[in-house]
Image (cartoon, rainbow, N blue to C red; front, top):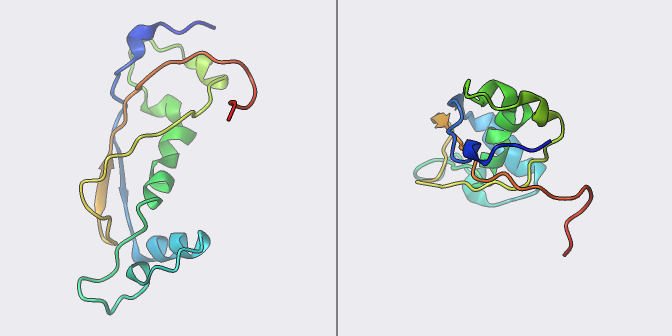
Length: 120
């Protein structure tokens, strides 16, 4: 299926979420990142979360992409065959438990490619 390249740069609907200390510590423990800044809640300034937790926070968008694409005529049936190819995140400051986040993505590119792994 060919997708019209005019959909590139379309902004997705906002995703709002909260970041809890439990999510923050659980994520760091799960990826075995033992940085004390992620666990020492007695540290001046408290804990921060691993920057890579942002990927986990954006996953609901990828998982339910059809709900985040605005009514622009995008062929939703194409979502059955797309692959989440890459992600670019901009960090403005460290994430800390208690943050109320608004995440808004955009379609950066529509790239056709063959089925299978990318060459190294």
